[in-house]
Amino acid sequence: MLVSPPTSENQLLERVQAIAGLSLQTLAERCGEYVPHTLKRQKGWVGQLLEIILGASASSRAAPDFELIGVELKTIPVDRQGKPFESTYVCTAPLLELTRQTWQTSWVKHKLSRVLWLPIISEPGVAIGERRVGNAILWSPSAEDTTILANDWNELTDMLCLGQLELITARHGTYLQIRPKAANSRALCWGINEQGERVPTLPRGFYLRAGFTRKILTEHFLLTPIS
Image (cartoon, rainbow, N blue to C red; front, side, top):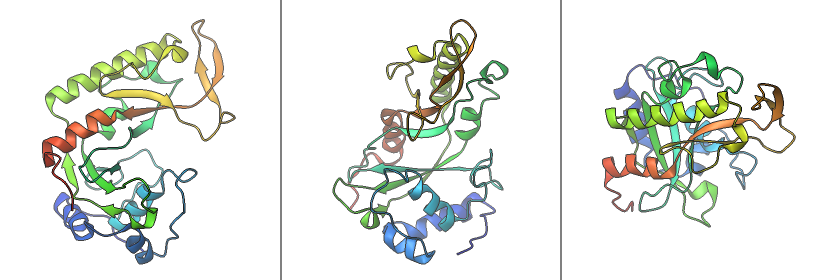
């Protein structure tokens, strides 16, 4: 199944409105995809399926998923009340290159400038294929959100640049976190320790806290139950 990339935000919204309420099984059948029994080793499967359906063009390149219109796609598992189950991955933390970046030039800011949030209703115990697509929203951070995200990014990257990688915990960051991102403990990359030396460590990623994504959904949907 080959879907051309959307050329406007309105066209993208028309596409997501057309699949609202459909199951992942139905969408997978449309494009000849196999529905996995578990997502433990295929964490990105849902997002990849929706990229195919909606015509995302960036693939694994460092660009917004919908390149022509500068929009990033973020699928987010929620319960029937619209409450997110988990934090949302934003992008990889470039552990050896952060000293060359500022918040304004960071990939985190770029990724979050314009986001299509696509809730996936995923009650515990419901098979993956039976999970359904919710109503999407097209979002940009407010001035207040941007200030808090920038403060988080600056705090976290300062710690990374000072070699304090192992001191970063889930308590750091109001909206934005840094967490390990690896399939197993053997998937190592290079980081910097407090002596300024290169050391092997787990890859890290920037994540949005579930409380922040719930705030986004609350502001748009008021957490009304999804039938």
